[in-house]
Figure 1: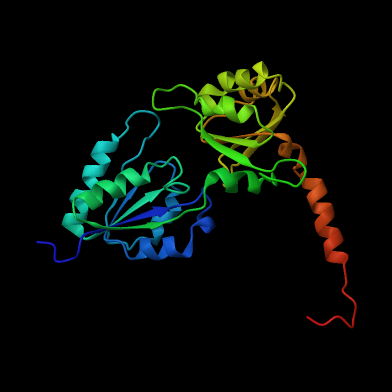
Figure 2: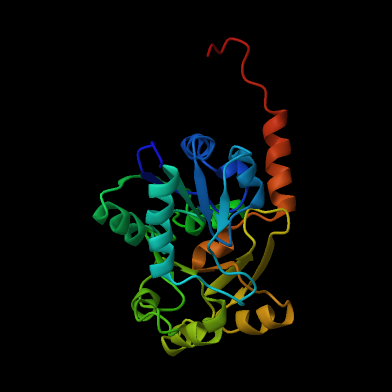
Length: 264
């Protein structure tokens, strides 16, 4: 019989790059008795788990199998009672389209102590990795983060509301509905609004394509851009530094010498 106190720690793994996991997240993995992890987790993160502790995949792989949420909830409780400290490792931030709240709520209903370690959301980190600000003075004063597909597979009605504003619109899980998403903006006359799609954000195989509402779907088809990808819509896309511009700025900064009498 397990003598350890059952507990569940929900850990956000961040957008992909291992180094973007928080220190608290790393400590939780090191203290785990068992880890349940999703499909979009960087495999290198599992190296932080003690070698003798089980690591169990409960995500979707190549569209062939998907664990129902109810089954995942049940496994969390089962393993916490059997092993003690279960770490539930989820991509990005577990409370941003991660169904994390459902999982800790289910565990708590079974008398299990729960904790949440926030993660860096891909909605924010991935655009930043490509020098795309979500807000910028005089350009965008706010941003929306919207799912690209509801539980029924349709686009969210919130996309139409966001499209009416001047805010930046970040869409997660939207590649399958990309054409329908662009049509929403076209109906509102936003045909020339800049769009960026970032695939595999923060990873070595990260890809970026840019276009407008009118052109982005065709470009994505031609470039064979697939999920996981973040869609960023708004004037902020045009603020992105290209690599040559960024290198020029860095070189200029490196040539700067502070006055000799300046004390820090």
